[in-house]
Image (cartoon, rainbow, N blue to C red):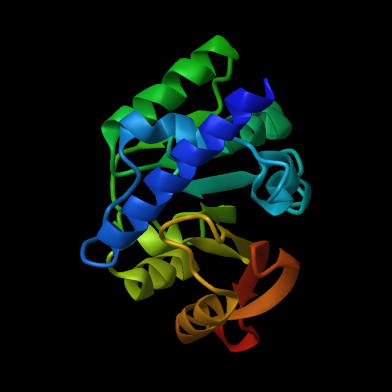
Amino acid sequence: MIQFFGVFACISIVIAAGWRLISRRVSLPCPSWLAWLVEAETPFAKQYNAESVIRHLNLAGGMNVLDAGCGPGRVTIPVAKALGSGGYVTAVDIQSRMLDRVRVKAAAANLTNIHFVNVPIESGTLGESRFDRVLLVTVLGEIPDRAAALRAIHRLLNPDGFLSITEILADPHYQSRKTILRLAGAAGFRERAFFGNRFSFTVHREKSQHNK
């Protein structure tokens, strides 16, 4: 068993290193065939794990949550379960095959409170003031126009809602807290809360008072 995890870790490191190098030249979202790597939870970066992300969201029945760049649904599915039939999750991804994976998981879990949307988050087609929470879990660095995406999310949030951004240093598209503060601040957000450390963290951003 120990040998298996050692091999798995080595493979993951090699893939992440190559992915990081390529991502410096071109925007490269995680391909659907690497979904297994995205879905892996890790004891070494607890803030990245779905349970930790969700615990900090303070979810309540009736809330509307947007999982932007949802991938294979590692966080989407447990959020939908936490909300129950009174709330819903909008799963957004630019890769239809990723959304197909979420659909399969949702059907297996008998979840009917997930909406699937195959558009870029910055498309501006998702409306305004619709969501109580917006999640960007290791996604921000994959977006070609991060500034436009954050402005779009600002419009999508309810006045009392907030944006939750999670990053892990091992991710090829890792965004530092300093970078997030700069980009989100320019889009009209201010920091609400911070959990974790520079290796694995979640930061919550809310609309500045003058934007409410």
